[in-house]
Image 1 (tube, helix red, strand yellow):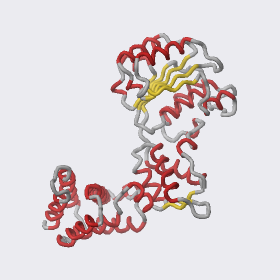
Image 2 (cartoon, rainbow, N blue to C red):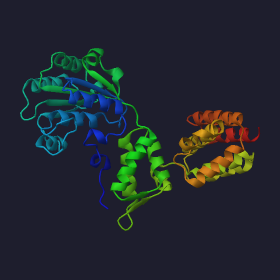
Image 3 (cartoon, one colour):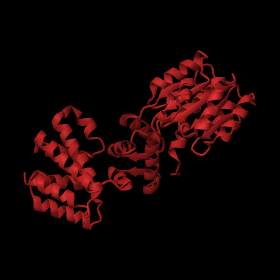
Image 4 (cartoon, rainbow, N blue to C red):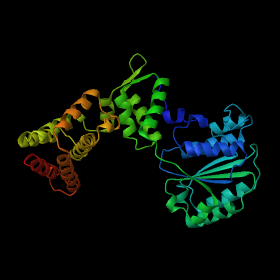
Length: 368
């Protein structure tokens, strides 16, 4: 199987393909249909949430020669040129590297001229919060009296750094992080198209480790395909493959440690810890994984109805093991254990002997 940059290959080319951000899609498509498109938009939200993707879709939709609704046709010359990044009237600027007043003055000069081919000249300014104060004031001047043939779309991950006068001149939309189920839905679609056999728990692990950013999730899936290769033209990906790729601690190791903690076997727990150290295990990563594991147990203890969301990213065997272990703890006991390990994880950053705070926490937990 050929390797592709999945997030580019499967970037939505229509509004109907957008995952999440339904409230924004609805408002923008209504504006296109009613021909009430604004001259300035501000898209704010976390990285990988679809800001520039929606900006490109909006640029295509308003310039599409065959558009009789709101969806771009992706067949006319305007759509094709924008998709290929060749449209002279579609300008994308990265404010991280083009943040000075001269860059914005050049943009202002270009905006004054009518489009060469498209109905609208569209400017997308990514990471717009990085513009200098002088550049922001220069941009404000054109936003106050924009030419009728221009549309400005500003994108930012840090709206609080934008000057208020620019925010007030734009129609603002707040993008949210994508949920784990939303990301899994897209990954399932890609896996099906790419003929990838991937475990559900592996998809969940990818989604959980993407922190709500679809682009990161697609990138991790791409890495997994490249890392593992294919067998008979079909890539096969398991949860343990993803853990190895992201450097995550094996859940089975943490589960063994929790067994020793629950049975109050101090010596075995400390020996197990030292054995992991000798094998090169990252102690800080082990502690973080232990905390996440015990948090799952606590949530299951509090409300068994949370079982589906709590057990995401675990194999069936790991899920069954956690359920059994949870029964051996009291709710208050899990709260106390988590507090001790959270404190240990914080102290490890400054400890002259890295694993010592974790060892002390285990001794205290198993001797109570």
